[in-house]
Each structure stands twice: as C-alpha cells, then as structure tokens.
Image (cartoon, rainbow, N blue to C red):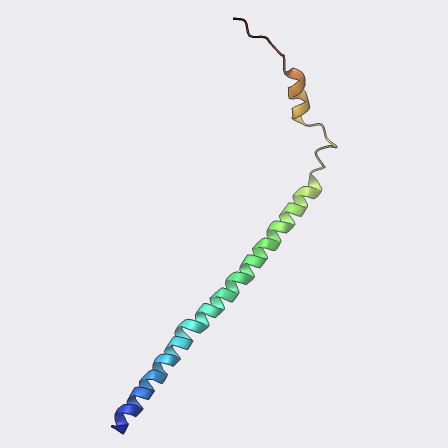
Amino acid sequence: MSIFRVLFELLVLYLLYKFIFDFIIPVYQTTKQVKRKMGEMQEQMNETVRKQQASNPAPGQQPGPRASKEADYIEFEEIK
C-alpha cells in the first residue's frame, strides 16, 4: 500500500508543478506585459493629444466657419 501512496503523491506533485509552470506563471507574465503595453499606449495617446492641443489654438481666438455660416443665414417666413 505504501507504493501506491508514494505514486499518488508524486502524481499530485507533478500535476501541481505542471499547473504552476505551464499555466500560472505564463498568465502572470502575459498580464504584466499587457498592463505595460496598455500604459505605453496611454502615454502615446496623451502625447498625441498634447501635440494636437499645442498646434491648434483655442477656439475663442480664431474665428471659425460658424461665424460665416450665421452671416449667410437668411430668415424667411412660410407662406400658406
């Protein structure tokens, strides 16, 4: 009976080893890598937004096409 117990314990240890090194560690590494890449992408997006804001002046400083559209509008009354 002792040999079966030893074999069972070895099997459990082997399965535990495979579970940890073939599943847990790769999932942990992948999660860490994805978080790092997401942080890099967020930084790139923030940098792009800052560059666009720096190159475009504030809307109040530059007259936009809206002012000309309002001037082109002619009111009319509907005739029945």
